[in-house]
Length: 333
Picture 1 (cartoon, rainbow, N blue to C red):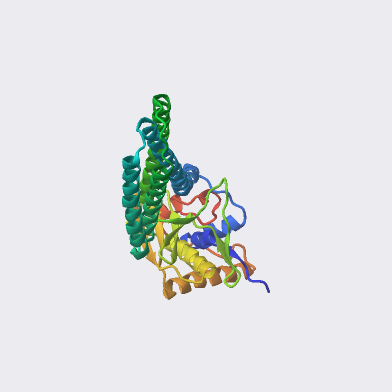
Picture 2 (cartoon, helix red, strand yellow):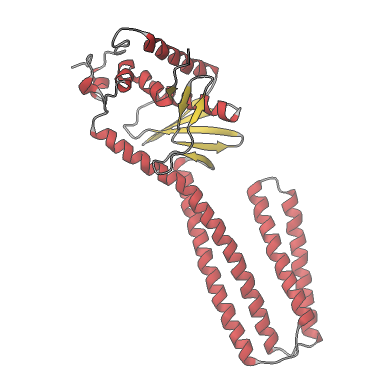
């Protein structure tokens, strides 16, 4: 017999109340204003987290453009100087000395790039190396090819062109800084450094599936921390004093899926409420708990009675907050 497949959301519903889960299988719709608000908020969170990659990509593109504009501005400005000066041997020597200084600086930053361990710092050093090397090349080329022509009109035209290129570089630099700041603020808001996966309604990402356990699901987003992929589940309702049992089951189910997907178990999962965030340690106990609940669900599916499960609590407040209360045959007053 094929293994019955459940979603991480099914596990969460079963943990909240088995009867709620069963009613959802029968197609009972969810009701209540909080459900609609939650869907809207989930969409907003998805867009915000997905925007991190968008803004970082814009920053990288603008940064490259800044580099090109700045180099062009330097080249044109130096050409303008060469049009004004009588390019004697002294001027050529000056350019050669300047080129040597820039090249030595490039060699220094190349050495730094090779010795740095942090990828971000290494990338910055490599970029600085590139800039210094290119400027050194330009200066050396000017020293060799310096003409003896004195042309004030060409000089003024070159300096105006250099100024325009510099303005362009400044514009793209401001775009870079703005995009980097937006990405930084969003990362800080959601306590992530790198996001590898975001669930959005417009572009649904891949569905994580485990044929071994008969489990599937899409976490709200996945944060990368070193070698680990950490599932994050966003809850938009009230903030409890501690993480709710059903939510722990759901994030535990996502941990099981990511362990299957990447071959390495997450250290933990995260439940984010509006006013608090909780790290849920992922260990063998939590994994076994999730799998045990799924076995209970499978046994329920095979039972002949209808419904095969019942309300598992005597809390009126919990019933009041249930989105399927109106169709529940065992609801509390």
